Length: 416
Image (cartoon, rainbow, N blue to C red; front, side, top):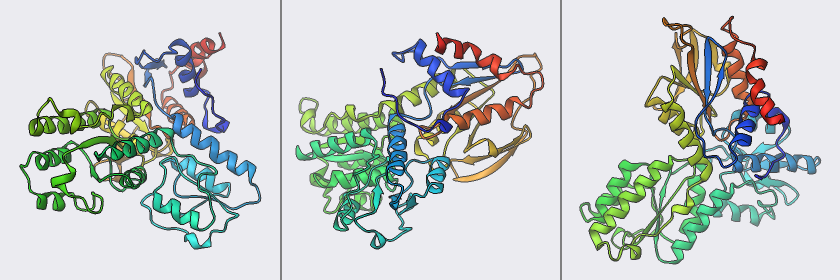
């Protein structure tokens, strides 16, 4: 049985959480990626098999709320947003937690105000060794309540393991995302490190490996993305690829395959293990499950997709990328962004701006078939927010079946 976390009830929901629980009962081995369907007659919601709170997020939430409960008289600080969801972070703030840094690492509250009696919580993304040391010098143990995702820690351990074997660590990630900053810090303690953002950047690194681009090109192209003292001529002879756990798993694999092929071309296949480390076991299972489920979801078809999550959530943005390839997609933080069938506010992940779209929701089809909405969410999104989205949209269809009747079969399967 998977571990049950003590997550506040208000993050659960009477619709989405029930559907997810029913699917777990019917498919405990999680082999069936076919989406769940809530059919209200004139409108249907196709819901991804896997989405929402993952193991690492639920673990973090449980620890953070326990810290509040166990320390009512103490000051409690988070290093930065615990997860990338404004509703969760907002609730923690209302309960008295203070945030020391923003998501870019900019100081909001100086460390000098901290005392040994204060509690500082590491977010799910982890933190750097430098911040860890700064807190330690002030008599604070940042791991008394450690919400770091175990799968992030697994990447750190693998990075340091291959570093001790004289491999350079190549991180597939966003250089200044909290998780990549933390992984970069932990990895460079044992090895040289370079960060690639995507497959395009990996191709440029492959050119350096193959001798098709100069050392000067490397330093210019990868400026601020390599560790101090990095020497491309020396440090790109033996490499291993790890990732920021919220990146597209398929892209991480493509990057690893590309760089492995570059090593084969440079040094020969017979000696490939001397030049390329096997790091496949660092991929986060939850990220891959959510992405695989989203691929099956969009293949099932729909008129449009709604993806719910924090606008600064990396894993959510990658689900949006997948959906955009097949259909009109709207990335919203919550139901408040959805004004009416005529108007919706949503994040454009390419321009990083919130914009308004009009006439976004078809209310009928000429052939009488239902309007199909593809629905999923990021790993840091509470189920309750999807309920709000679903309820609002269903309310615009006067002939829709009652929600309780549509959810009843899922509720019954859980009860059985």
